[in-house]
Length: 481
Image 1 (cartoon, rainbow, N blue to C red):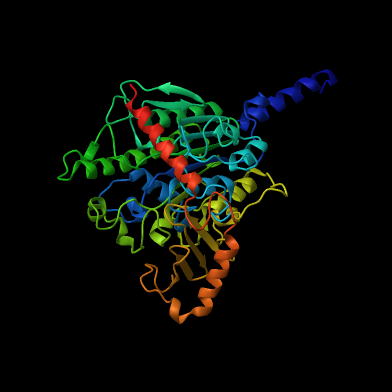
Image 2 (spheres, rainbow, N blue to C red):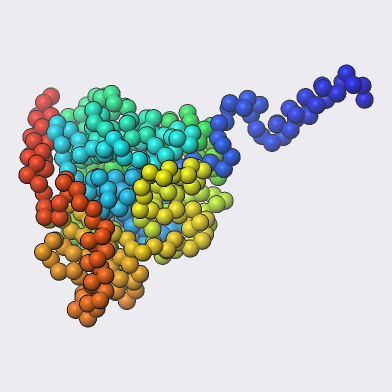
């Protein structure tokens, strides 16, 4: 071969290799580092474990989530951060259980929003952003208004779309949403009932659009869907319109099926973009159902038929165990059902490991990486799980091995249950196991870190005044045209 032709041949072979591998010729077209998966965490609002067909629901239809479970792994003991909105989200974002987390209740702050995350908090988004990820949050935030350190745009997210304030998220036809920190008015809505513009449609569209514009780089989406939290408003009752039920029952069922439809569209988008095998999607809920088993919803949809006790604002298993599905074709085992336990505070170290981003020594987490567990291994071992909640009187709970302990107030005795023998927490065996009760008391004392905002004696006068002012500000906003 002529020496003069050799460079031409080498160039041709290089280009042919790139084409044959299906790689873009422009190296800037895909900035993903080797092995960095996309991460999407979908958090529904007030879903019961029993709301999904794959968890036993017989009436409400959830075909896309059921498909996700068939193609991925379904978890029977996935624990939320606690049993109401803001602290459960904060536990997820910070990798801390609610004995250490800076937000441990729905602390309202005027004129709009909730108690903010402190400036020195490390969030999942910040960890991933430092590893080169594009980051977006959509739906309901509830951890700080835009002029506070808790703004999503100051906690690691490049983009935000949705509701900043949890209370505003009770309306599905709100007067406004936020695009980043810019308030956008919604046509035909007054925030006081059914209007013309359904907020969830705008939020879903924003998520899909953002993913399409960032799919050539590693990305993280925290998608905090407001469905099916009350008020149970929806623009289309769909397949439930002619059911012989109350309007509330039809609306709730339609909300769940709308959530399912949107999850189907999300998975379809990943497949169409060809990034499904590069993307881990986790779907779960922020706390248990808001309905008692004997309520209008509970008696029809029978979410409590799984035998778990309790619902939202309690710390029994029915309030803490969530429907949870992991989907990552080719990596997460398909069709697996596991009772290995994990909790929201495990997500931060999990995301860090997947992104190849070792945590700095000063980053505190109570979590364990779930990477091996996600890929088919055993759940990580740990000394205990711990929860507390500051709504009304503060309550605490912990689980270690087969034992679950619940303390419903600082002056209340510790209740003790053996979950292996009594998953429904129906028989308090505290009297016959004093040594186990003592260990539970020790865990509760150790796990609760003192914080002036969250005393175990109850709401502070400052919090009561703040929440009163926040409610007044909300009423004024809703009365304004």
